[in-house]
Image (cartoon, rainbow, N blue to C red; front, side, top):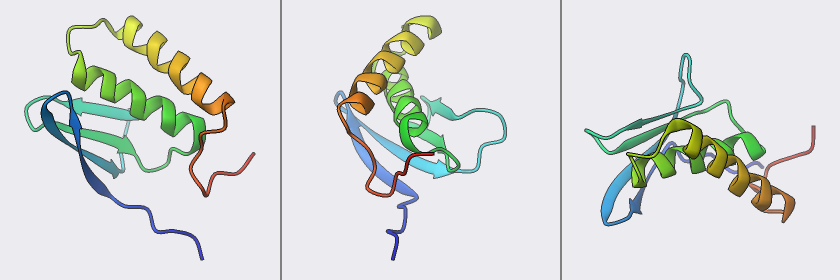
Length: 95
């Protein structure tokens, strides 16, 4: 039986508590809300796309002054390396 996906968890980013939620998003793959310290990740993402988006939004949370280009470049690099090294969710499958 597949594991149920947790809809919300709390993590520390730097010294701040943030909530990470998997939810339906209309336009973006992820969103970072500084006022509520909430990261929303599209519940349709899996595999390297999920990893890339989660890393991307965590970078926004930790370093809000970085440009979007810098965040995108760094998150794609990190997620690509982790994926190449075999870091995946247990229920991921090759498409």
